[in-house]
Image (cartoon, rainbow, N blue to C red; front, side, top):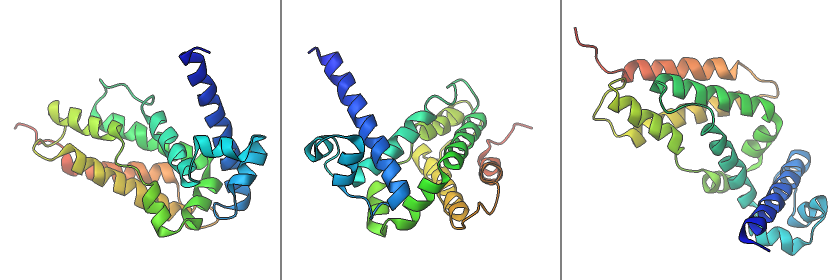
Length: 194
């Protein structure tokens, strides 16, 4: 078997296992789902699951990474930073609205240490948008792009947590994210020459 074919088979199996795990997490909760159940749902041996996902939290990391990867296809690098960041937030809002029950269950059911373990550094796409915005004179220079991106990510995380706290969405997620992002970006806008 060629390497390309082997990698394609591996990717298909990982996707199959992730789909099974997310389905079960949605039905039984994260804590209520076992590796054996995931194996049965995917119709594979337990060891197959462990070969691809050695720990149950690895499914959450993959789910989060898939979401971050989707952000890379949302914008073009030649767009202004404000436009790019608004597109990211809109795409994230749409993802969460599509998967609200699953996202809510995972946020509610995970222990604090598991939540911390599944957190990923700030998406590179966000850092890149900030850096390019500074280079183009759209945003204040001199601020570390990663630090600014961490603040942007914190706004997203806090707004999402508030949106997930009630059974029914308490407010328009996309609108709230856009409003908060504008508030931050207005403060970060580069001064205009008079």
